[in-house]
Length: 400
Image (tube, rainbow, N blue to C red; front, side, top):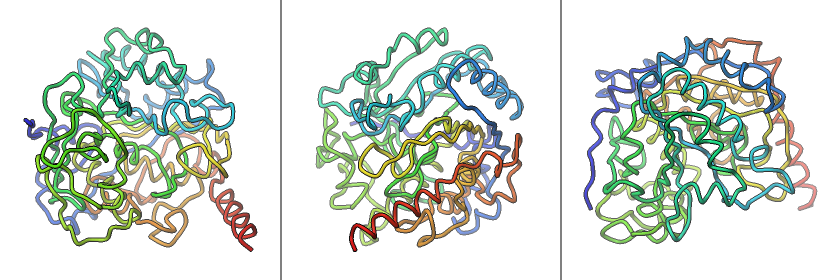
């Protein structure tokens, strides 16, 4: 199996506050946090996905300095956050108002990129299917029409990144400072073959990492052909199958020999230890140039529909050019503390992935160091923390 060795990411990380400088990447991880970059985060109220949304999103981009300076003449890759499968629903709610970013928001973003002069827009997601179906088939199963996205901009492409897809080889993304879980990750070539990388995700909780947001979205870049149950012992499997549980969550086996093994095979096998480190690694290895958090409608209690999950309507949009700083303000908008450590809400059973990514020099999580435009965060805050406390109280009452 051939791999493209990814060398240009550190240079691209300089765009729009996306990452550390080339010089700083050589420093030990512990010394990088104090020099971690920060960038402005823009937020505003947005109650619906109707006509009000496009001008609000456009205004948020303008408050960051204008999206044209980031995307003009560039190939823009957008990592979607289509977790849980296309038929997983919270009651009878459409996926876009529960756990997937809303398709109208995605189209609005694409329209603004196109209007600002983007050369090409690629929609990326590791959509699971034993037939390695195109991403468009995944969207159709969710009752989303791919033609809506094709009409949102002039040059649009789709890529299922759970295998090589339209490419012939994987790209190797090395983690600056050597990595926390793996020293490098082998990903679909589309994550390298782009000038601008965008992450869009819901404002919601997560059962393993406390909160989802635009950072956890990058965990879905890892292809099941390499990091899934059915991955080969020596080479990636031809088709994606199974889940990431044995390799990435619990470390029950290593990826194929074609990929690099873990940094420390004797480290904790607890997924609350491993997954935050994998996310921090991926954020540092594949810097995000623009993050969009969909908090118009969402759900509280987890990342996928299920028992104890509540639909919520925070009515807010957030946009930023540093994924860690954007996540930090997103946490504040959920009434969570981005400075919290393991054992504290919402990181009761996991390490704080924002802190780990900050230690790698990928961004700043301290709200006191982050400029925020728009209304004060407290005015748009939706209390996910209170709902979390209520759920825990109900759980203890049932056990009692």
